Image 1 (cartoon, rainbow, N blue to C red):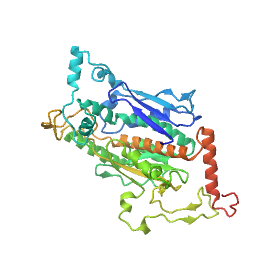
Image 2: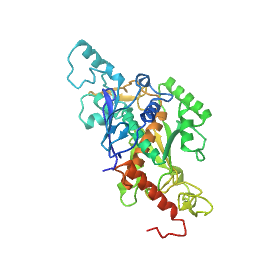
Image 3: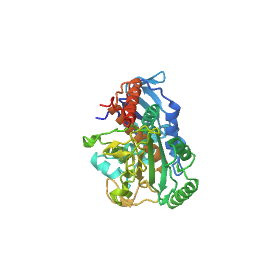
Image 4: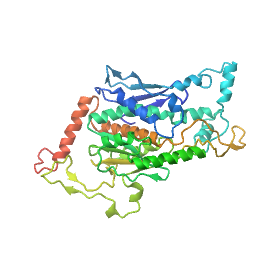
Length: 411
């Protein structure tokens, strides 16, 4: 079981989406505005649906925080769905009352056609459902609001330890940004990304991405893309090589691939590295020049590994990318079948995004923050922030001093 465990609940058009984050240290001062800013970013982005104009997501903390400070108890969060007012009969926990209003609303929201690429078909068969909506409501990416809320808490924890995480959009469809972030601090990346309607740091590419999204909208189609998440100042040794489920690269892959519509991920050079010889992939290590300050006992001139070697962080910048397929709800629709008759039809359409890649970059950041926070809590003493900060500081000092000639204090 992970040291930091997240459980989410609720349906897309139900009363609320909820998060329970268990294992979070006591003593962290919570900035609700920072968490709500992440939720607002998840709702923004060119190509989103009209649903985002209805909702204005903000957290309601119902447990685990007192007087603005975490208590060590499970952090319990609610995000109310304003649109639920329009779905009272469809999403009622009680049996339909049979009124004319209830019958009309149920008929208007009925789903009888599967969408290729969605959870509709497999989920309906798996859980022996009689109504496709029972699958749609929980499989919807609306659930990611709960992840972003919890990820906001993880982001604050990492920030308190001097670790900054950023995300941005690299590509939408075949429009790829040429901009490099290698020389940018993560704070600058976030500022540039959030100033773009598609969360791309390159203004010219942002405009071409918007044009591609507009063209897809006109055609009744949808677009996917690629997002990147970066983390700076991570301690060496988060994760482990000792067991498969403790490897950080595996945990990051699971976290990112669990996001709706993600179909691939990579760390560092990833796909490109598989096509090169080892001499062009592995990051050579050099002794630290004593005239320079370094927080690590070695220095590197490259970071093809993306900050992870042997299932553990190596102290370099963490670089991960996730690849998102186009959203399966198409206005034009694809050939499908009805349910329960299984007769030929065009797929169901319900209000949906044309492109949610910018929002996905925010969700990906949240999942990376949660994964890194879990690894830190797993490695260090973490019942309270006082213990955690002291433990991390001591370990960083140990690693930094290993390159000194006097190693008397090293084990």
